[in-house]
Amino acid sequence: MKVYNFSAGPSMLYDEVKAEAQKDFFDYAGSGMSVTEMSHRSKPYEAINAEANALFRELMHIDDTYEVLFVQGGASQQFEAIPLNLLKAQGSKADYLVTGNFASKAASEAKKYADVYVAASSKDKNYTYIPKTYTFRDDADYAHFTYNNTIFGTRFNAVPQANIPLVTDISSNILSEEIDVNKFTLLYAGAQKNIGPSGLTVVIVKKDAIGKHLPICPTMLSYQIQADNQSLYNTPPCFAVYMAMLTLRHVKKLGGVKAVEAHNIAKAGLLYDFIDNSALYTNKVAKEDRSRMNVPFVTGNEELDDKFVKEAAKAGLVSIKGHRLAGGMRASIYNAMPVEGIKTLIEFMKKFEIENK
Ligand SMILES: *Cc1c(COP(=O)(O)O)cnc(C)c1O
Image 1: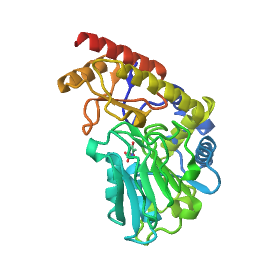
Image 2: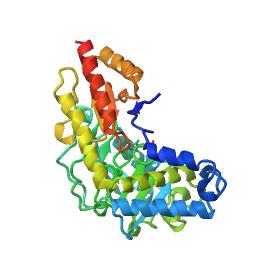
Image 3: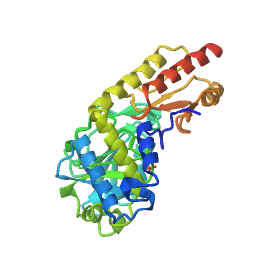
């Protein structure tokens, strides 16, 4: 059955990428084997590792002053890797903007190693907006924020002003919009939203910020160790890196991140316009802070929301239930969601509205 998958992650991949992976599965590049069976020290895998790295650099305009690292443990493991690598000493200062569940988890993890200051939080309104006024401490080692808040459907429209190194979680908006990497000391993302299967985490980090990790930093979490070994210190998530490479090739073919961003703005615009003009559905997020990747909406009646989710699934619109912390529905419309998926969803929403007046 053909479905449109609105899951927040893992989420849809491009059909072209899946077809390519299927074609290669028994015999990758004449090796006679699948990438899943291949030594990570083999020539074909080294080429995959290098090409994926080069494509990230090309598509995101990342220069030689940065390392691009492929690690495991998900974005969640970076919540602890970041303080362990960037703090000048255990107990020194780190500032956080708490704009959602993942941002809150990142701050909590850092508290184990750092003097954490929450410079701003939007918890007072269940994370439905992005705080606009805050100041970071001048003597903090870094400031951390979550660029796109996957669960609550908000996004920073502007990069926060900071006189200290800036760190951002781009798990749910990487490759979906142009990001000026040069504004950051570190950016990181789990792959399973816009890049490929889970298992891979991408860390883009300024070279001059690494090599000063805390003595207690585990070897596997040290950016220096990963950089010195071209992300091959131990067995990497080979198949996830390979799938990422295929996605990156495809994004390049589509015209790069800028072209994909224009498409995403149009897709999100269709859905928000429909919601704003409907009598049944509402999106509770402050308009100027709306995410282009995750669109939460409610009917205002929990039973009706449940009915919506069930009937949508029957119509091939799957995984549209909202996160338990936000309720209602959430349409995650990452890069690989085609505009036809959005239009099909809107048609379904119209029909459901008429039937449930
Ligand atoms: C999904 C997500 C995470 C958690 O990622 P894992 O790879 O599951 O650890 C963290 N931050 C953001 C913004 C996310 O969307």
